[in-house]
Structure formats: structure tokens, C-alpha cells
Image: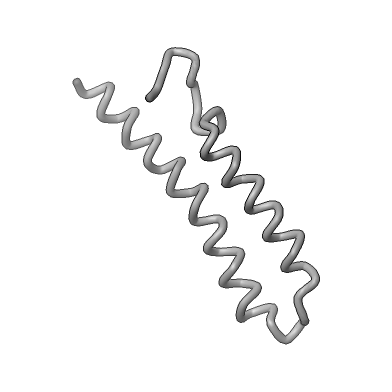
Length: 69
């Protein structure tokens, strides 16, 4: 749950792990064949980024709900 020490989504452990995962995916897919650049490489990268984006979006929504109550 959110505490007073949690100021942004970057301080959430799940987002930090998701960000590390994104960096790993980019590092790994950099070595994929060029003919996969717009196929698997793009799909893997978009899926990985989606994880951390969803965490940030959920955090923003949760903050909005806390300020409304």
C-alpha cells in the first residue's frame, strides 16, 4: 500500500523490477536478427514497456482516488 514515503511510481518495487526487465529485454533483443526488427523484437519491447506503463498508470489512478476521498 502507499505510504507517505512513496512519492512517485518510480519508488514502487514492482515498477523498478519491471524497468530492469525492460532494460534486459532491450539488451537481449539487440542481438536478434535484423529481419526480426519489426516482428518479434518490436513485440517483445512493446510488451515489456507495457508492464511498467501499466504500473505507472495504476499508481496515478490510485493517487487520484486518494485525493478524491
